[in-house]
Each structure stands twice: as structure tokens, then as C-alpha cells.
Image 1 (cartoon, rainbow, N blue to C red):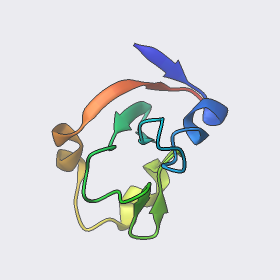
Image 2 (image 1 turned 60 degrees about the vertical axis):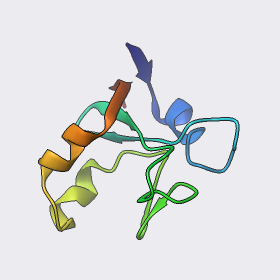
Image 3 (image 1 turned 45 degrees about the vertical axis):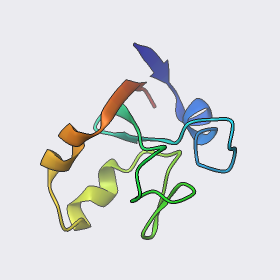
Image 4 (image 1 turned 135 degrees about the vertical axis):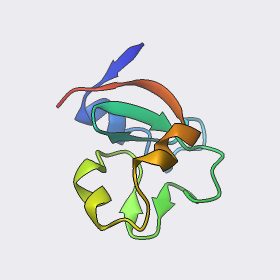
Length: 77
């Protein structure tokens, strides 16, 4: 499994149509390229290409939603 750092993860923010869209959460990197919830790398006020762990406390859902997404790597700060 690939390991991503902040610089590598930022490349997957949805701004490049050639790259898949990723975000990190609790040390895992998830792909959301085809998710209708991440249009052009944006999920409400949250951006792809970064670690969203700290923002989940305010989310209207819990960790169960992550089980529906594909894990593509690990995130190391």
C-alpha cells in the first residue's frame, strides 16, 4: 500500500483531471474520485487533498461512512 505525505496528498485535491481525488482520515487515504459528495474535490466546506481527521467531529455522520470508500494508502505527516 502506498504511503502519502502532505505534499503528495495535496496533488490529489481535484484540481487536476488526470489525478484521482483523495483525502486522509485517521492515517488512511481514501479515494473519492467518482463520489457525488466530492464534486471537483469539494465536500461542503471541506477540501480533498488533505487530512480531514480533525473535521469529522463536526460531521453529521460517523466513521461508518468510511467503510463505503476505497482505501488507497496510508497517510504519514
